[in-house]
Length: 140
Image (cartoon, rainbow, N blue to C red; front, side, top):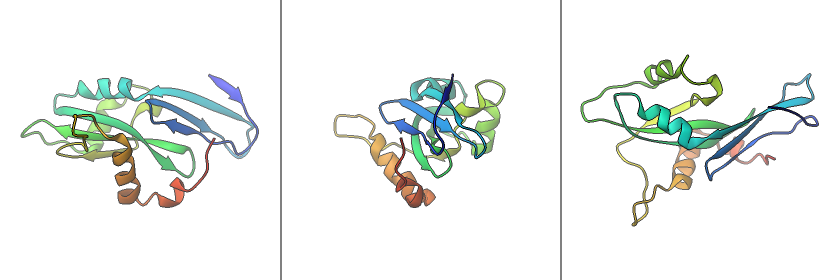
């Protein structure tokens, strides 16, 4: 879907599973909006034989406002690199649905009732990836 905006608009990711990315090139006054559902991307990543569990979140990006990050738990004994996982995604899902960042973990931060704490994952990713400056930018 193409929507016209004024210059310098940015995008945001609604942590309730909806991603809105607005890409604005310097010479254009239009933006493309992608509505991505994290669950859709997670379901695709589950189809990889080495992936036991996965969570997709949005992390700040200075250029696009937000980028995708996948936290992946591998099956016991499996070995997988982030580039191998991206290669698995290519030609099967749209390029803008392929996570820019991939982190392999043993477990996700959880509440005492067993719910994944995506806000803690986002905070950890900002610290680990050095995205503090991007996180400080006010987006749409």
